Length: 102
Image 1: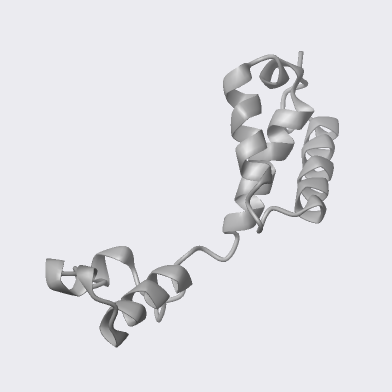
Image 2: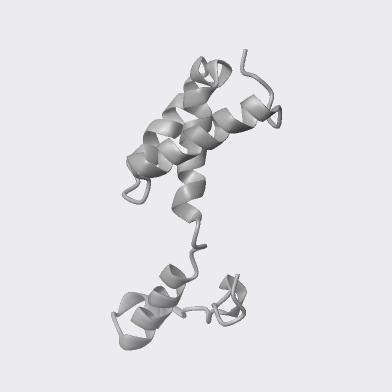
């Protein structure tokens, strides 16, 4: 993370009055929260989806399938990112860096 990017702990807390009424201060805090999302956040979500799709063990577990379905609905998780993650996982399996799925 870049030193100029805000951290969650650095952001000011909103008092009850500010939370109830829209204001430029509240908009600025929300904007900082949105900007503080890690740059590879969507790729990480896509990697989780790819991990579920590439593992026969995880495909059998309803909890993981439900998680993958919810993550796919995220607008930042695109087919391109999932495809890149699937290729990385298959390459890691081929090179022996990741165990083969059962």
